[in-house]
Figure (cartoon, rainbow, N blue to C red):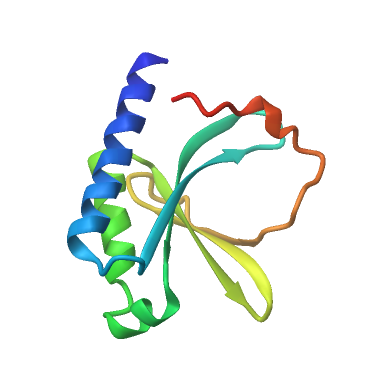
Length: 122
């Protein structure tokens, strides 16, 4: 709906602004993504990726705090953190406003997802 589109655009602007003012150019990148559930429903969002050396130079949770602050501002229940663990891609669900949503699962590729369902429109 219109409200979600407007909030999505505002969050995108905040991500761009925060990255450009708080991090060295090229050390952080972002792109739009979507969570797709088994029932076919989805939710658009953003992926923010930090270079490994930047993450090691700063306190461990600095990047996480940055993302949680934005999630809190935009009333998100939880965020996802993706990390490799023993050559497996893991998704860690971190509660922001919805206590009890914490979970850590392995991410598997699904070649059956119809990506044409997602347009570039916001």
